[in-house]
Picture (cartoon, one colour):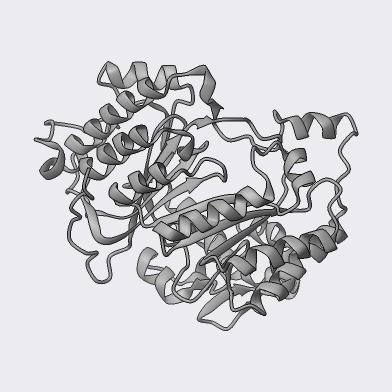
Length: 412
């Protein structure tokens, strides 16, 4: 399969749009993960791919008639009146689950359906998540042929003992080898890390940062461990059997990442994300800018043309609905103007650049300070943010206490 032709470049001034594809399969379920995922050994991949192809066709015909065929008359499949054809996608992100748990042939089939079923802008960022130990040369070749130009590698730690505790299938050495293999094919590779792990201290976290920076990835994400209900870690926490670092130690690890990565040329552009110049995640910026994206696959969420909606989570239900020619949507709701304004501020504050008052005014036709004047005063008085009349940004204290800042902008 050759790389699919891409569409026109994004028009100047047009907000970018993203496409997300959820692959709900993993070789093993990690002890901390509460994403919508299922064991690969239980089967169902081919059924999932067939259903995905049908979902692509449903949306392709409705939203992009030039790419997917003639548009159906009357209201669209989400019950709205027909709207003008959207511009092409500027980013594509294939996540999971573990997309690279699929075979090379299955990855080619997935990418062929997605990249061939929708218009994709020239120069689009096309990312696939991968786990160490699942990246063979055949799979990397399939990804390259399919139009992928960015890999996001889930490393999590450079400590083998901690990797076992997390339930990961790879070792630190395999993580390095997978990164090196990915780098042979792609010049844009991101690495995900997790800190504040059970039994972890600052010295161990520093060793992981030192190891990964030696590889020189283009982008590094550092997430503090969150304990979720329905996970093994959640159950161990309930039983009092999980030895987690305290809040002070977690904060020390976050500060360490900030200082260490800045000292090695990485720009801290979002609360949990660092990048070399020009390598910020374009897809994730669509989320943080409260933009538009369409989600495909079981459990995928979308924000599209004034609505939010989510697909059913079970692959069998997802496959059944699209086989019947129905959208596999579990719920759908209109986004109110107030909600859109609140989300624009909350998500925008995640970015170190903060919320631009001029952009807010152009988007909503009202001044940021007129809508959120009291809230801005409170976060500034508490030392969580700074406001110069043109931009609202979190302070360093606000980065550590970001949830407290966000809470101020949520309507009760």
